Image 1 (cartoon, helix red, strand yellow):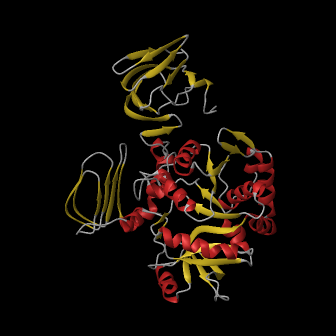
Image 2 (cartoon, rainbow, N blue to C red):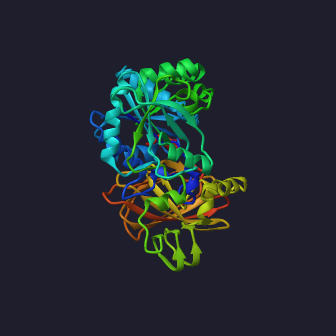
Length: 470
């Protein structure tokens, strides 16, 4: 069995914590580890599942690689890069083509990277139940046993059981219902939330994809045939993949195949699709509040309040969400949290970067965080991981002042190379080639002051980079 981890989403409904450059699958929303890390651990706990294929994009590739190294590095793995987003049907096709190279009848356990499953044993048992059906050529989807008449999920209607199999024939996929319809589904007992998780043989998925959407299969085959290796990643051909139609696995295959079956899953599942869904997951206080970080309240009930740093003081509120980050604060009624995307769309339309970037921006060598900015200067806090180094680069429009506040640094500046330690500093004039390296075993922290006429991140000319960035 091969775990296929889908990690290309942007998670806009959990803004401002989840943003395009660092979406919810990389956040620690349900414990000490990220949702992606939890997904990896969950998949590799399934007996016989010792291979991992992750699907992600250019922007997230190094974060995914780091998580896989930390939480699944002892297992064989591949990271496939989608040059453009084309939804789940093409993404899974790339994974199936990758698996078929080594294991023609290999099974794919397809898992989104941003879901929560609290009952690991129930999940493992459900996968075990689905393996026999998948081996016989069935396309298994996992239908979550509903606990409420939820209007935010699509549903799957199961047919009558056949023999001793726990998997039910799929009678129908249905879109997100209104409240009355959802209540009817709950009473009927044979409707399940569509989890977006699947189990099937690679060859069977490709066969059915070729039957119902041959143009998707052809584009994916062409893109994969022209793949290239790059560090830990496999890059498929951009032009061929960009020509692939955009479609989900449900619409492309599962709604048409005669071999779709649904396996009921009761394992404490949530896709954390909104702030109210996260409130549902958390333990509440006596006033039904979830309070995280520096928060004080008076006459507040049924609220989710999350502070990343600053004090939040709330009074006289019921059923609200308040989320504070370093550069944004969200205030919304819980009845409207499904519409947070409308605010993100406004930020995009206004050309503001808060829809995409946090104040802390992750890079393959570490991260940087904006501290202050005004006309012709900005201040950043740079953290370089042990053994990591920035690219050899120069800037056309800015100079940089570096002060070492923790650890040690090897600084390349023009033709010279110097070792700096805490409280030492250096100046990088405009146009001078430079690089920062952490030779130590603890993170290197640097305060950088930039001055110049233009301070955008695109003012970088790279001459050498161990991470193969342009």
